[in-house]
Length: 123
Image 1 (cartoon, helix red, strand yellow):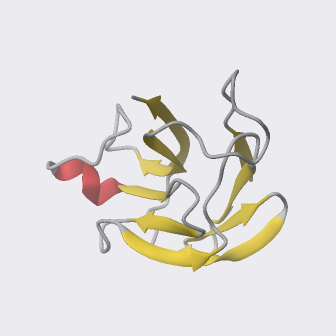
Image 2 (tube, rainbow, N blue to C red):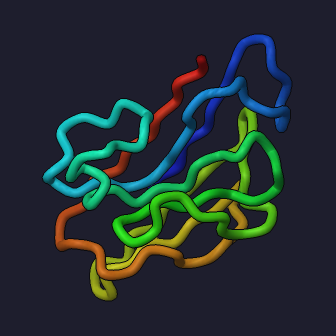
């Protein structure tokens, strides 16, 4: 399990993060760099992530099967929100938490080895 919280100096807790690509998730050993953008190459087949949606209330999910898809109501995150990822190695799955609240288990069929990542890239 790991948690990530994004902060920006001039933005208050819970407010929308500046426009950019903000994501928390997992990558396989085949991804050596995550630059915050969705790739058009094979790295997209080895990345599982929750992306903020500028507080639309829905979070966006990407994985090898869904490029970016609206996922769960109230899953978008803002400044100082805590996004947690719980990996279940026995079931090859991962669950997402927002500020300690379980949101669901959107990721299945994970490889044996996955690594945490977070991307914050305000434009």
